[in-house]
Structure formats: C-alpha cells, structure tokens
Image 1 (tube, rainbow, N blue to C red):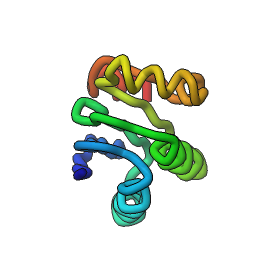
Image 2: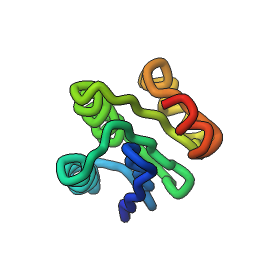
Image 3: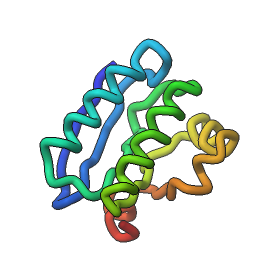
Length: 111
C-alpha cells in the first residue's frame, strides 16, 4: 500500500495504490492530513485508478478528509473509480456527497 500526492494549483491529487483497509487506514489518514497542513490545499481529488480494495475503514478516511476540507471551504471529488469501488461508495452514501468524474481534468472543472 502506498499513497502518492501531486498538486494541481490549490488541488491536491491523492493516488492510493493497493488496499485501503483497517491495516492501512491510519497511515493513509496521517499522510493526507500532513500533506494538507504543509501545502496550500483547498480541494482534494482522490484518484482510485490503482485502488484494489476498500473497506469501511477506507470510507472513514474519505469521510474524515471530506469534513476537514469542508472546514477550509474546499471541495472533494473522486476519479478513475472501478465498478467495485463505486458500489462501496453507493452503499455507504458517499456517492451522494462525493462527485465521481472520469478523469482528473473533469474533476478540476467541477472543483
């Protein structure tokens, strides 16, 4: 499991590689939060193109970052979402608050 960051202006693109589960959730949470603190991040795009699995701990990570970014008057979106991950977003209700786009450019346009 890895997490990679790239910046597109005030938008932080978070790419999670591998699994986002109870074993990796705290590590991912800390990495994202420290990246938000040290940069001029206003918005976050989660790139799920390399995410193989996500459980309820992963949902918690995303929800927590959503709350944090809202406090900064920012927005979040997800891109490159597989059908398996989309099902998890739908079942958890995250898809109602987290726009899903095909690619990063599309997400940048709505943020």
